[in-house]
Amino acid sequence: MKNLLITLDLEDQELCQEMLEQSIGLAKAYSAKCWLIHIAEPDPEFVSYKTGPQYIRDEIADELKTEHRQIQRYAEKISASGIDCDGLLIQGPTAEMILEEINKLNIDLLVLGNKKKGFFQELFVGSITNDLIKDVQIPIFLVPLQKK
Image 1 (cartoon, rainbow, N blue to C red):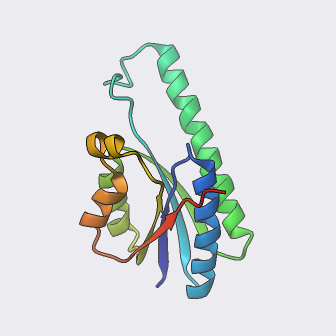
Image 2: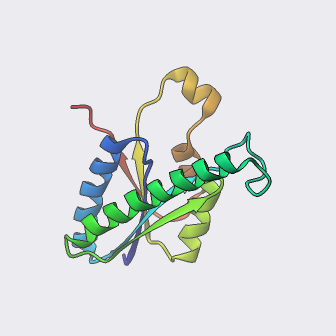
């Protein structure tokens, strides 16, 4: 196992921390490189970034810069543990972009976070984790959010 892809939801810091701890252990055990990835979905109400009002473009750019800095801080934390690590911030449909990066980076293991959702949220919104479990052709390491 040479490449781990760790998917991060930057809105859930508790799950991110748990995933980083688990991933450091995996990467050390297998002498693997870590790739951190956060998918920033384009705002569905804002169809064209280039033609929208300037203040909206500025807000989106600021949010992406903040997310990029956070991914880089996480990558530095893992690198400080002696593990080769790079962070990626990509815009697009989450499951599709993760699948694309798995192929592009020759990923051997996908690390996903799992937090429980309510029945109706799961029924109507679904789960990216469930979609990936169905579509991914490599092993998956699922990190449950441990309530403390």
